[in-house]
Amino acid sequence: MVQRELKGKIIALKEKFPILTLTGARQTGKTTLLKSIYSEVPYVSLEDIDNREFALNDPRGFLSNYPNGAVIDEIQNVPTIFSYLQTVVDSKDIHFAISGSQNFQLIEKITQSLAGRTASLKLLPFSYNELVVSGKFKFDRYEELVYNGGYPRIYDKNIAPIDFYSNYISTYIERDVRQIKNIENLNAFSNFMKLCAGRTGQLLNIQSLATDAGISPNTAKSWLSVLEASYVLYLFQPHYKNFNKRIVKSPKLYFYDTGLACNLLNLENSKQLETHYLKGGLFENFVINEFLKKRFNAGKKSNLYFWQSKTKKEIDILTEQADKLIPFEVKSSKTRNESFFENLQYWKKLNKLEDNNLLNVIYGGDENIKTSKGNYISWRNIFDLEV
Image 1 (cartoon, helix red, strand yellow):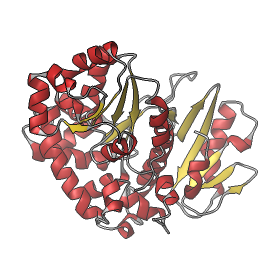
Image 2 (cartoon, rainbow, N blue to C red):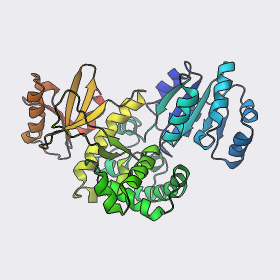
Image 3 (tube, helix red, strand yellow):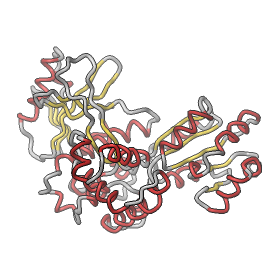
Image 4 (cartoon, rainbow, N blue to C red):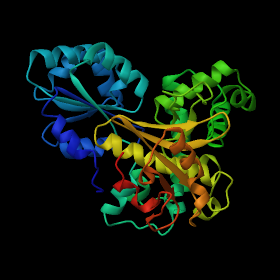
């Protein structure tokens, strides 16, 4: 078992809250992680039809079977249980861990019934650091990691990514999409996902996306919300505080797992990624995901943004830390080039900064190098960065 970085945070919070909520996409390892931590209490999944029917028809009776608490998985399948769960933890010194893979339904119910009673955490697929620390996996090229993605079963069962993701997508579309939204044309939705993958790292243009997908802009927005709710993709927000109106305010589109995006782009091996037109966007997606995983695994919210002016001056990642913003450029090239610092230098002048040591280029090479213009940081060392 690859040790999850989130484990320590869960152990710390389970002693302080009556309920711990863990969300994330299907098959990111939520069940395995919770079972390893909560081995002393029963585990019950509301994916199981009998359990689900019991919880739906007799929620009090269902919960009475767990006087010392339990792990309740896929809890969004029985949304009515949240109010009863609130009553139980308010009346007894008892702890439950609940998990689910559909974020919108969970967040809505938590806000209504469990506010102040639960610690909420997110589990994404394996981080690069988790795989390296395990000592079981080695990557000679970042293209391998970007193509493979981070879903645990790929590594635990040695499944070829092309086989895993094809089945994952099929199962996801046939089951989860219909649960969240009553989408009748699943082929159109599948095509929509592929079109989203083709826009990885690009500014979101709803009208263009809808036109290419042959659907209305409102339908495109609705389908994007489905993909966000089930942790397939996210909209990366721009930072525009303290700037004038000449700043882009549209979000960018990224996937929570680059392996999934690669499969939607019909990539069949990591070699094909080396010459793919979206190589830069996918590498950028990988780096942002690693930053997000480090934040989420520490129990923190995202503090990440990008910045772009109307004249196309852009900073790929801004981390908001207390009273300062730290800029990062992301370049898939394995060769260093001074031109990589151009936008960072522009940012430095705009913000009247003096220290070039705050300017960082994360690139596809293997060495960390300090220069007079800023720092080159290898993709292998991004976990060491303070985000």
